[in-house]
Amino acid sequence: MLQNRFGKLAATALTGSMLMGAAACGGSEPATTAKPSEGAGSAAPAAAGAKVGLAYDIGGRGDQSFNDAAAAGLDKAKPELGLAEAKEIEASNGETEAAKEERLRLLASGGYNPIVAIGFAYSGPLKKVAAEFPDVKFAIVDDAAATGANISNLLFAEHEGSFLIGAAAALKSKKNHVGFVGGVEVPLIKKFEAGFVAGAKAVKADIKVDVNYLSQPPEFSGFNDPAKGKTAATGMFDAGADVVYHAAGGSGGGVFEAAKAAKGLAIGVDSDQAKTAAADVQSVIVTSMIKKVDVAVFDFLKSFSTNAVKAGPQVYDLKAGGVDYSTTGGQVDDIKAKLDEYKQKIISGEIAVPDKTS
Image (cartoon, rainbow, N blue to C red; front, top):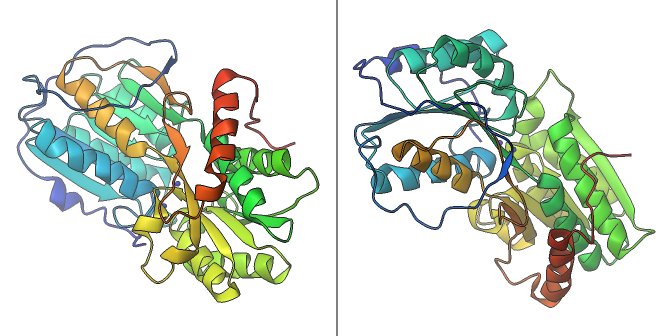
């Protein structure tokens, strides 16, 4: 979902040997519910000597959220799967789809296999490049539209995790007024909003929920503009909200600053941001909606190492442990039983969480 999101295309950095990693052929598979990995085991020969390419969304490693979660999966895989090399490159703000195509194409032609694209913005470019390199295994996070025999779609039930976060916000709110800051108004982020609003209203039907998006597509700066995030959240706190949830990547740092200044509370996203955010704002982060991109990336790399890559959608939902809420700092200890009750109702199907706003 997303500091330092500016261009590092650096094509010259992609030079190197042309040895292609071996991968199994895989046809299209039906959608499966992923089971987060519990350990790597011993790597099969396919992993030894593999050169992994990882293309980040805007912000790259160091965004304290979405991209950092993906980086954690890669970092786990390096020693456990015996990867020979990993090349990490990131998108630049405002770049064209052609730039994304070239990034992926340079990785594939440079002998990197498998290749993981982090974020739905790679959808069109990845589908095109994957067709040009049928022997390379590709994965894309947060996108189901890019399909192909060599494409794995790593998807999440963000609305389910956000329902729990909405419930937490409502339970913690003393003013019956909360807020949601979205980075860019696209269907993926609308899923976060839909779940958050549903969870808040499940607790308090009359709760007021403010919503603000920082940018509109095709402008994606909303994922890396802390100043805009701070302005949006400050407006919500000034209007009476006392808890604000963000799904805005690097812009979330500004939301946390606003919460601190207003003596309010904030909720993080993707990573456990009470651990990853700047130390001076961690205390205002009551919880985070954890989206286990690290697990999905590791699982994909592990499946490559055992020649078990499956094409098509693999969904990391609440039942599979792919999304959850964090408890760092103990600020939700008093409401944990209630949140876990909602969690079980979602898992059992008693609560059906909307993935679209009305």
